[in-house]
Image 1 (spheres, rainbow, N blue to C red):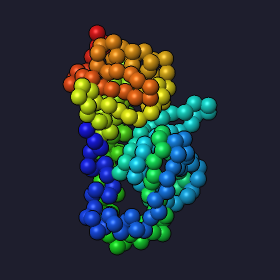
Image 2 (image 1 turned 60 degrees about the vertical axis):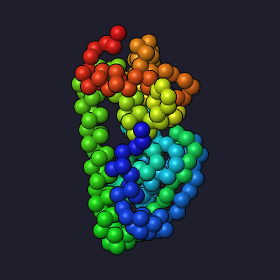
Image 3 (image 1 turned 90 degrees about the vertical axis):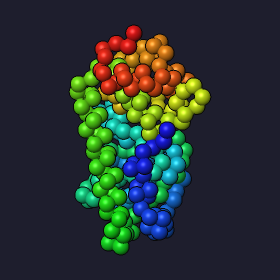
Image 4 (image 1 turned 135 degrees about the horizontal axis):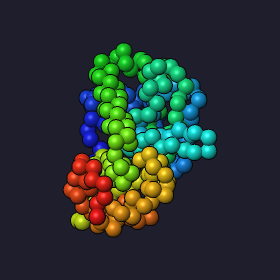
Length: 229
């Protein structure tokens, strides 16, 4: 399992157009914990994750709310770049990696030169808005354990690595971060993870989740059953 092709910005382009985008930007490494985008800052650039994983989050007082998780091929900062406003959320590295940074003048120049880039940006933003809407509906209607299971399946379908007996998710989200992303408290999230583990559907390792029965988790999320066991 890997990220869906439509999630990749550059995969929507021809090789020549993708090379032009790369040539116009600068690839920079980042360390785990580094902040790639800072809320309230008006730095005009598009960031395309090349390697590694990041989380998008907002702070409400002392509480951090995780909004989404992204990986290789995905773009960050496109909304602030398009509407010319400050960034509304932070983008923080969950792992070490690298990203392509494309400053606003280069970005706008490419848009005028590469018609397919416009469609690529629109397609990527549309997919992200659809995912956000689905997540919002899930948080409003689903039980806490289904929310947590839904986030796990989202990660497995996009970033999971198939092994002999499981789908491995090598993204070091803490239990608090996963719970926040699912819209539940840490205590509720931990309890949900324990239930999913006890049902034999997942295994928990340090900063890693293995989905041992993807079909069962998928059915559970789709049916929104109140309890798995």
